[in-house]
Amino acid sequence: MSRRSLSPTEVYKLLPRTNCRECGEENCMAFATKLVNREATLDKCPPIHEKGREASLKTLWELLKPPVKEVSISSKEATVKIGGKLVMYRHELTYHNPTAIAIDVWDDMSEEELLNRVKEVEGLSYEYIGRTLRLDLIAVRSTSNDMGRFGEAVKKIKENTRLPLVLCSLDPNVMEAGLVSYGEGRPLIYAATRDNWRDMADLALMYRCPLAISSPRDVDGLKSLARTLVEYGVEDLVLDPGTMWDGNLSDTINNFTMVRRAATKIGDELLGFPLLAVPATVWMSEGELPEIKAWREACLASMLMVRYADLMIMHSIEGWTILPTLILRENIYIDPRKPVAVESGLRTFGSPSEDSPVLVTSNFALTYYTVAADLEASGVGCYLVVTDTEGLSVESAVAGRKLTADKIAEALKASRVEEKVKHRKLIIPGRASRLSGEIEELTGWTVLVGPMDSSDIPKFLQEKWSSQPSQESGQLR
Image (cartoon, rainbow, N blue to C red; front, side, top):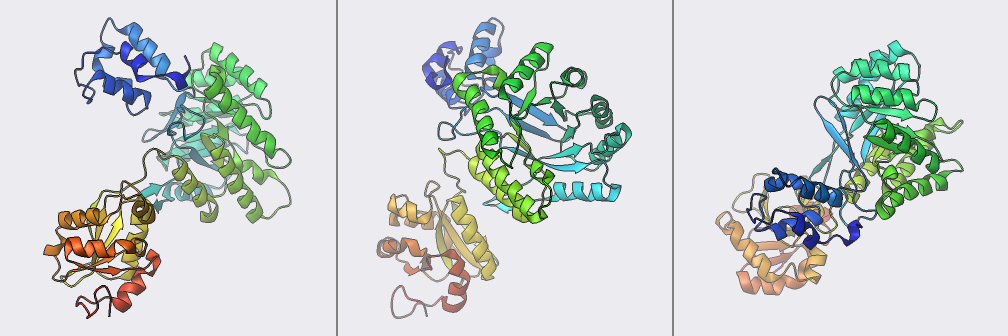
């Protein structure tokens, strides 16, 4: 059955239909709807796992399982899940499991260089609209092709990071040395090819690790290898269709797209595995400046993330190359059905007094965190009333009647900010200026129209704020 035609009624018929509420929903139909929308999982329904319902559970699992299998890569302390995709386009249904990003290290680095790079990867952190962006894995490349050296490098890295690893070598003997050194955990073995697949498959089965298949520019060969490995008993596979820039960029993008389309639109289970991209391959080109290579890598990474890469191995870690990739990932992997919002209510900045300014904004996350950063930069203690606009920005909320004088009056009353200040002056965003008269009528507060752009808030507060009203309503001294 096509997953696009799956309805809550079809799922409901296979559920126990006891309306026991153990799943947290009012009834089984509500739970079925959540299952179809991928807002709940079958493990939330204890009755379906009872004896005698094995057939229904199996049928439900087949109906609900994602066309792209979810694969876990883990260390002792952390697990990264890749794949698990349900749809080809994010407007069909939100994407799950954000693209994992691994940064490469290599086994012929000096110990100091190796540990410094691992520390840099582990320590990269960036705050973006209330979320902390980080890197996910470390890819250990065997450039020496020496078993002892590779095993030692893997051991040192494991001792100095909690991040899971991708072990990169085409030599099964070198790979096994790395797996022995790794010990507990499930690193990704990269990679099996038509020449070494049997030995790599044996390692994947012996150490219970996921296995990546590499077949550059040959989707048919990739599918053939996947069939062979599945029949051999390897269940957790990752597909690498090849990543190229010079002269073959269009082939790279097309191959990634074709593989994902085959899985999600046609239901080809042999291609229904996570996709691995290696933007770091741009560093193999000769005679180019490092800045050019880093720029190309960032461009390639952004293209492949949009075109369905579930895991990427990158080389450059400079902020100007890696941060745009992390931010793009954050923007892609949000639920398009739900605006990114923060909780409404009163926020305090600095050490406000009874003479401090009171401002209003929306609860759209990007708006809130931008305004919050600008208020902190001003150094002025103040209060901020965050109004529930259902996650819309100020301008959109005003246009869509999600930010109205009534809502601001309600938020102002609920915040009880009038108990904290002795004045009655409220600063509203410049883009909500047309609400000023209505707000004054409903609240009795004097409305002061702030700047159009929040970056002007520090200057606005520093130069114009006064807790005492002037002769003209709505004006600042």
